[in-house]
Image (cartoon, rainbow, N blue to C red; front, top):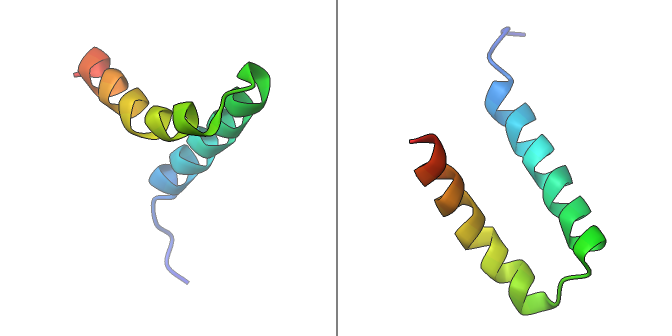
Length: 49
């Protein structure tokens, strides 16, 4: 078994857990959930880039 970088997989899992928490905490409706999938990474990329 090769030792590789599990960073992207771990980052994706943390993002998904945070996304699910946000949906539950904010009581979002379905269209805001779908919008958030596309808009949130855009804003995050602009902020970090």
